[in-house]
Length: 113
Length: 112
Image 1 (spheres, rainbow over the protein chains, first blue to last red):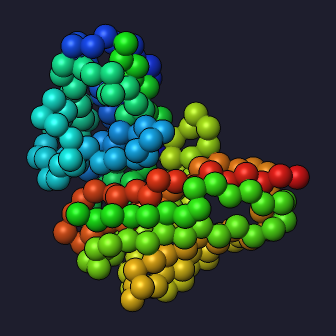
Image 2 (cartoon, rainbow over the protein chains, first blue to last red; image 1 turned 90 degrees about the horizontal axis):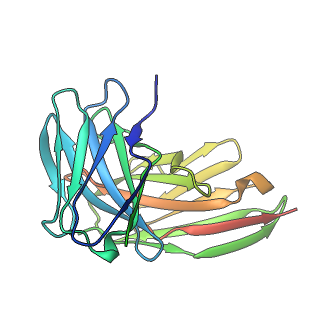
């Protein structure tokens, strides 16, 4: 099976802009989670989607949002970008949330200037 | 919420030695504990995981132990090789949640 894919791989934006990142899970996986990775804070959970429903959300401001489509593909959106939003955004998919392994995508490197 | 602490933040060992990384968690309801390895510029890759009904799990040179009473779990790598050099992350997840809560990572360097 093909692994988790994310597009784009790299993105440069300026403060105040908005950005949309995409994640395609492994075929058959219905759960998609998003994480922000920064050198200072490590890997932090953003949100998780299952069957188009957000089931859990981390401690991020409302500028961070997401959605999931009927084919399990997921997008996350960040509005009004700040310098501190520069990070590697990783998504991970699993078959379900019942203790199954999460497989990570390669990430999208977002740089905010 | 769940808080996961990981030590040490950096670890340097000689090739062939063992490496041990320790993590503690705060939520006694946590029931799933994976370990990920992330090489520079690459995605995190699961190397081993353990569930709360098991005390120890081994896979070749890698083992994980879990002490539920003390709320800590450890990664053991034996006969280390230079290709083991990477950042290792522990994580914990509660039975009622869907998020993995990660430790801050351990940068492991194995010198020949």
